[in-house]
Structure formats: C-alpha cells, structure tokens
Image (cartoon, rainbow, N blue to C red; front, side, top):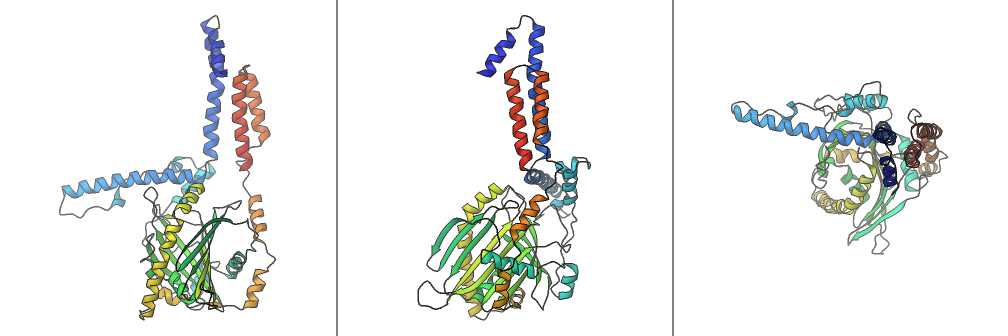
Length: 440
C-alpha cells in the first residue's frame, strides 16, 4: 500500500518534468542499494558458491569434450577415441577476476593442478614419512581422540540424532555445530560376536573395503612406517551426480592399550598426489574411532561384543546445512551396509584367507599404558581455548563497521529523497548488511 500511494503521489505532479524527476529520485536509491548488495554479496560469498559454480562449469566442459571426442571417433575409425580430458576447459568465474581481489586470487591459486598419475610406494621407511610429513599423525592426535571419547575436549554439547538397532548390531549417533568449521558427528556402534582386533583390521583394510563401501572408487598406499604403523593413503570417493568426486590424502595410525584401539585418520598435506580440478581435494578431514571389547547384550557377562566410537567431520565443499540434511537422511542406510561387510570379513578370516597389506599394517600399533591414557585424558590443554583463539584471528579486511554502513545510508537517504518509503528501504538494506558484517 505504501508503494502504491507513493507512486500515485508522484503521478499527480502537474508536469511531466516533475513526474520524471520524482521517479528518478524514487528509483535511484533502490538501484544503488541493488548494486551495493551485489558487490557486498560477492565479497562475502561463502566458499561453496565458488565450488558449486565451478562444478557446473566443469560438467558443461566434460559434456562438450565427450561430444567432440565421439564425433572425431566416428570420422576416423582407425584412430582411438580421444579422451575426455582433451576437451576445451571452461575457466571458473573466480579465475577471471583480477588478482588484486585477494579472495579471488586465493581461489585461483588453489585450483591450479597438474594431471600427473599418482605413484604408489609401499616400501618407504618411517624416516621418509617423518622427513616429508613431520606433523602427519602424532601423540597430540592420541590426546585429542582420548578427550573426545571421554567427552573432555571442551567442545559444544552433543545433540542426539538417532538410535537404531538390528538383532546383531546397535547404533547411536550425535551431532554438534562448533563455532568454526563443519558439523561434527559422533556415533557408537556395538557389533555382537566380534573381536576388537577383527573390527580394527576390517576398517583398516582398504582392499576389502571396496566390497562393502560403494563410495570408495580408488585407494592406494603411498607411504608406510613398519615401526609405528603410520600410513599415508590416497582415497577417491564417489559423490552424487551434481558434484565431482573427492580425493583425500589421509594420514593414519593406531595406538593400543590393552584390548582398546585408538585409530586416527585425518587429512594431511602432501605432494605425493598433485591437486587436480577433478576429483577435488578435501583438505579438512577427520575420522577417528575407539574400538574396544564390551559386554554382550545377552547379559551373560562375557566381553564378546565390540564397541566402535566414531568421530567424524569434513569440509566437502558444499553448504553445511545441505550436508547435514544429506547425512541425516542417508546415515542409517550407510551404516547398515557395514555389518554384512564385517560378517563376510569374519568368514574370510575364519577360512584363513591371506591378509592384505593394509590389514597387516593395522596390526602394527603403538602400545601405551592405561596410566598414560589417563594422564592424556586429564591434560590441562583445552580445545575450547584453541577455538576461541581461532575465532579471534578472523580477517578484518571484509568486516565493515556497522556505524559506517548506517551512516552512509543516512547520508544517502537524506540527500536523494524526502519520501518515507525510500528511507525505509535504504535503512533496511543497510541494517541487513551490518548484521552480516558483524557475523563475519
């Protein structure tokens, strides 16, 4: 109603010149607000916007490449079909931006990739891993997972998500949203009639994982340490059709205390496999679990069941809210596939099937005492302090003060128009930007 009355008031002006002048005054601040909104929105765009746009461009490039290769194959049957990677690649939008824009330049540099084939070397020594990747998997990771298991890491409270079960398996899941970083997940799975050692080897065995994990399409061992059991592995995982596949450089290691096993796997920086546009590298990845014997639900007092407490989070490059929805909808379906794989693995082990290289490495553990674990769990170093310090180091280059935005809006509103509607629009847009700037 306010907009209609304002337009009627403008049209009632006695001359066309006055009507045109009032319309210009009325429309100009709105267009200015739109232009400012576009520039500010692009400056504060989330990282997933660039990723999704690049995914669409990559898929279009792949289609064009496929069509060109098929046409060339039909014209010359004697020559082999050209691979799809020979098509014309469309650059991402961020690569077209000038390097003077810092966040655009960062995206462009991060996307430069070499298409070299990965080399697999399973005979590398422990010293090579420590020399090339000095911070791969250390005792600090043991401290972290111990505090996660005992819920002493100082993080937010866990929100219960799910409680499911089958006759031979029980499953519970929780989620929490830290101040920074992707959502984190915690789950507790209890397998009946399973030993911790078998479950440990089962989750570590990449060769056998391909039989039950349909998301894993490639795995290779790049480095390994025969002394500590530390491994550097390369994974490629399948993602839905609207996203490219993801690849992971994972460092992993196992600590043993009695019949409890603390298995740490996390993303580590490595140049063993160069970055490529497709599959896209996932840098932030953490998936670790504690495996131990527990009493069976039959209530006979025997420790014939195996408990697996898993902690997982990763930044896949898609919006976290969408990722949370997908995890919630597909979590139980994915978990139900684990138990048939475990039972098949038990049968093969009972039939004396030869162990894979990964399963043999799973049996090389760093042994620690229960007293050492207790001292680690009660460590005074609190992860909450790390989160607070990280949030205090946010870049201030894009954080526009609220007073500056509101003050500019006040000058603009008073200088361009005397109508109430235009002032309300300008102040509303400015207040919205100020709230966004305060959150960043």
